[in-house]
Image (tube, rainbow, N blue to C red; front, side):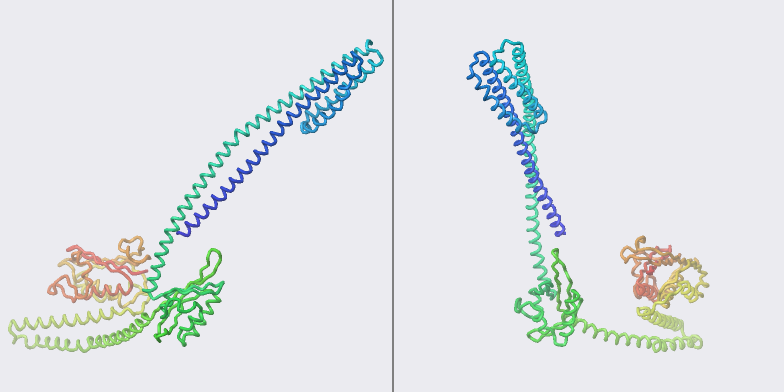
Length: 594
């Protein structure tokens, strides 16, 4: 989980970094653009002023030329022609400047063209007028007309210059307005961007601080985990090793040295040094496992022995698994465990199993003796009692006859007890073969075994159709027989027994009695009767061996029958439960895995 949190944190910081870089580049780009706009605006303002200045100079030069020309007309003094003669050159220089600065404005270019035409006409008019003055024709109508035309041309030039100046001033206002707009917007935009950048920096700082705290906390937890792992290795006799595949380097944990009977760092971490501790008889097997590990990059469970420096032999279990880091580095992380105690316990367990097998054989022999040798004296006792009752009963006193009856009852109970114990011992063997069996047939066989009692007590037995299940037939037969016998035995006086056998298939998810069992489906069989019942507090006790809820004078029995039922159901991995109410009857519910 911590790895996922760090991954998210790193991704978040990367995003913050990229956003910050983007904002910085945005600020730089916008600043560059704004400076460029300011530069262009400045150039345009300078151009406007320069155009206006050059136009004013053109007007000034033309006025000087006009004044000099008029003075020459009045005085005929050629010295007054100097301004007129130099004005043309000055006007040409100014026009050259105007064409350069107004080259990008099509309207002004057209105005300059028209203005140039007017100026050419003006100087042509000056030349014609001078010719009239030189020839003393100043009083002629042609002179007057030419002089008047000079005034018209000059007025046209002034008008055109004023138009150009007005256009430049208008453009200057628009440029100043745009320039001012840029100036007004730029600080706000830069402030907002810097504010966002500052917020991102603060968020990054907080994130880095939290990550540092989390890293410190995780480092503390890792330190605790490392110490716990070392203690666990010591207690569990484990040792860890790591093989770095790319560099072919091994590392051993301190406790791995302890398992080998050495101090930590007593020898260099190499495969050859480790193999030197392996038992000679197991070296070839382990070497083959290591070769397979180097090829397949995996080490399955491997068992071998080692010899410590004090000649002690230890049994070792080893395992390794491939891990690939985020940067693609491969390494096999492995573990060795000292299982000498387990091997010794296994050997002891084997010896005990042999003893148990021997005891089981003796028990089987005892069962044979109980079924033959012990029952033979009981049969003879019952035979002699029968003869005494038939031939000598008249010679006995009333007390003698009573004693004889008690001996007969005790012998009969002894024989029943031996039979029940034999049945219980046979049920107690779980190694019977499971066979797919029709439970209806087993139920019918059980009914036949108690047919006389059913007729005697006029019992009614109703049953649902039972399934075919894989069971131990003999034990399920005993289960049905004991449940039927139990219901017939504990019936009410003068009330015919009514026994119902119900079947259904249920799921452990839907039955409240199966909450604590593995999930799955079960065959549910219910035996219910209308007998004398029992207190529910004895619901578990009645399945115990020799457990009886009623005295033997009123109800015969040994207290083994329901124990056989419980053992049979246990052998089938099932559940049996008893529910009862006094004088209302008993219900036995059986669950067998489907």
